[in-house]
Image (cartoon, rainbow over all chains, first blue to last red; front, side, top):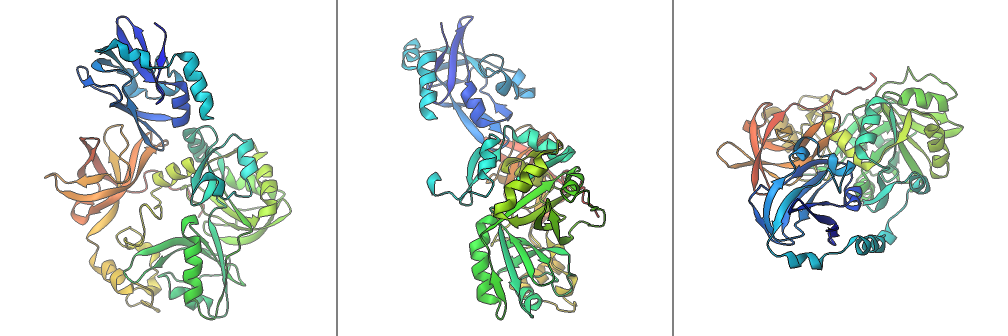
Length: 124
Length: 371
């Protein structure tokens, strides 16, 4: 599947049977240099829109909401020592966690790349 | 206040030209950074950063009795402040709290006070109400630039046509002609590094800024780096670490109470809150401002409670973030005296977890002042 986006600037993409979640390039740009990421533990059940992770920039802490409901499979262990990966590779190596979706229809509520691009342009 | 009501400094156009991310601060549209806080912070520590601090207030006080009159409002020694020197001072209230922290410069014909942006209107009213027989002038048509870092002196010297600054020591303040502009320059700052704070006419600020930026060692730095630099240097921020409800002794600023104003001194007491402050100077305060190093990588920010070993609240964090030069999170906060010694272990609840912190001596980085 293609990558889907939320209005809170998270992305979600199916890979290897699970859904990977992260924050968008626009989000990392707005946050500035990220110095710490707090990730959900494997096995935690999250609901769509729930605060699932926290990113700390030099200036402030921001919540990251889960784009889907379901169980967390794995947190990106690389972010513990290299939180700057979120700035460098927000939509690839800087992924936050993978999860199983309990309700795949939630994906339909999210934006595709074109819609998200237009959404970001509308914020300028 | 909406963004349309924010005031602009004389360097606003220059900030935009350099890609500043603008943030509202004390009623002004100010540059938070020009691309990255960490890069600007590190550049100040190794070369030189140029900060626009034109939002801060300048208040000129003149009159024959100005030194004595100022001493009635602050526990500083102003009477013996030599011409060409500057001192750090605190305006205190009747409870011993800190109305504002400021620099007082003796410029010969008058004293110049440089005060915090958020306090400047109230400070001027306070001074006008209490400095009888003095003229109090709070000009709004000036600019303030801070050039900070080990390369600051060489860069400033270029604008003097290669003039020598080696006889200008930390906390000297004097009139200098920089790039043909009449400026008042103090060798001081808010970063822990050598540097200069320059007051000049608004209309000439951009000229001087561009001249300084033509030096490859000098880069613009924003409020984000200013905050992380001052935190690493252990410098208190009024409105966060100090304020009307904290005393100089609690804040670890007892050194700003001059010897002459202490019990037994030549002009002991005679400032607002003297009873509280002098009692705390001899007997100690129940709480003290401390440096804190979170043991993990998560910053512990202002507002977090500090807990002792038994889980009881023993204080609160007042500033916190990431220290780019020390490469770990750092915080400042108040702790009860028995928990305030370096090495003391405390915990702070953050998002449902209790994070361990160690009380640390301040500053977190060594000061590099030119003495």
